Amino acid sequence: MDGAARLRLLQALQVFLLAVRRRRTEHETDRLLFRLGGLADPELRLHRFGEHLRARTPEVAAWTLALLWDRVAAGDRPAQTVCFGLLDFRRLIRVLGAGRLEALQAILEAGGHPSAGLFASSTARVDLQDQEMAPRPKEPVGFRISLARRPVPTVVYRLLLDPDVRVIRTLLGNPRLTEADVVKIAASRHATAEVLEVIAEDGRWIGRYPVKVALASNPTTPLRVVVGLLPYLLQQDLRAMADGSSRPEVREQAAAQLSRRSGGRTQSGSGVGIYGLGK
Image (cartoon, rainbow, N blue to C red; front, side, top):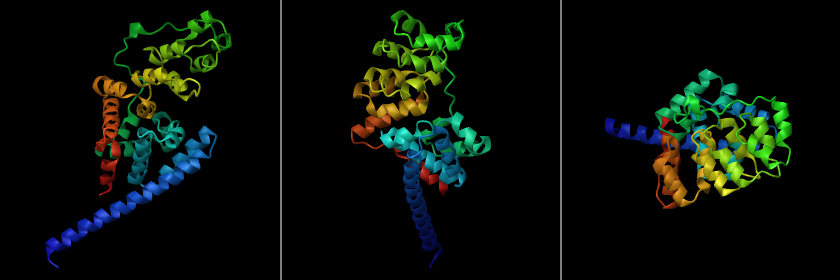
């Protein structure tokens, strides 16, 4: 066998082994989602997820994150339910540590996979100046939480932009709260990422289409939340986000959704690139 033939054989073998590793990782990810879906405690779910990633090589752990991200982006409801509290930098660093997380970030970024956006800060707002910040409430948080339970329209309106996530969580259950009120919170330039995440977790309100659009359009909404909402947006809203979002990751994911609906294929949303990193 000459040198050229040997090289072709080695290349074919590498492609085959990579495909085997990819298939194995896909099956492991299926089983992981099933196991995590059976855990009701969010903290236990997070730590089991961390154990799974730590037991894999950095490449396979990065592939797993990419696979989960792609399923969330494709509108896979079980994946969205399980991954909502997992694909978050602040949570992942607790169970993986900074060094391990940096290694996964480097692999995802090198492959150009959109899940690298997990590591982008969600607290920085380029469109929010210091003088625009809402004044801090003077009352103790416990008092404001008790107010949030009262079915009084003036009280509800007063607490809409409260910065404490506990107040907003209580307010979301107030019977006098309206869809327009929730949209105002979801679209607010003053809302924190934690407050927006609480709205996305609320089963009563996240089913409302205007709330979905407001959350997806807010630059502070955590990226994983936006990606999970995109499959449910109408064509015109997706197009508006693909053209006008201030976040490049959101523009890319919105364009990928449009491509899927039109029957096209978008590599950035398919996860193909990340699997080439193990070569």
